Image 1 (cartoon, rainbow, N blue to C red):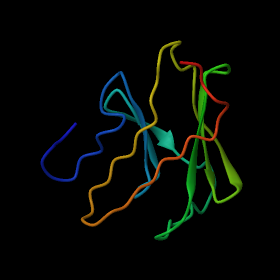
Image 2: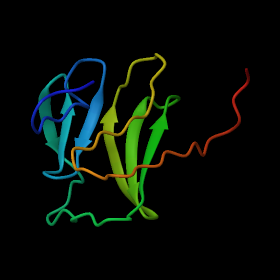
Image 3: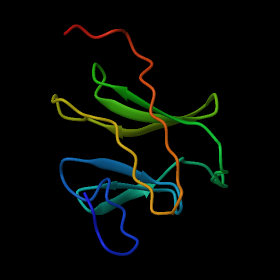
Image 4: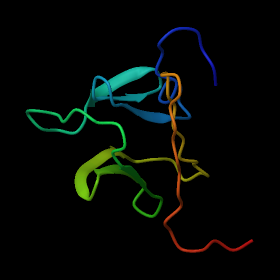
Length: 107
């Protein structure tokens, strides 16, 4: 996916769910689905912080952690399909690392 200007790509269609860390909005199908995390003073994220994506296909949920603090479930009722965690960044020289922490997969 690619787009000109500042556009939240993840969550922009019916096949993706996204969390915009700048404004703390949850996005799906091109629409804002509320704020996340659900607290009075949402944190500001710093360079080097670890954000964990927790994709649970048994419960069909998508949740997040900051460091080791569970922020809650962001999306429920995900479809029973192959879903792939993704990250989108708009700032130059951004570095992102994705590490799979689940059980080993066959084949």
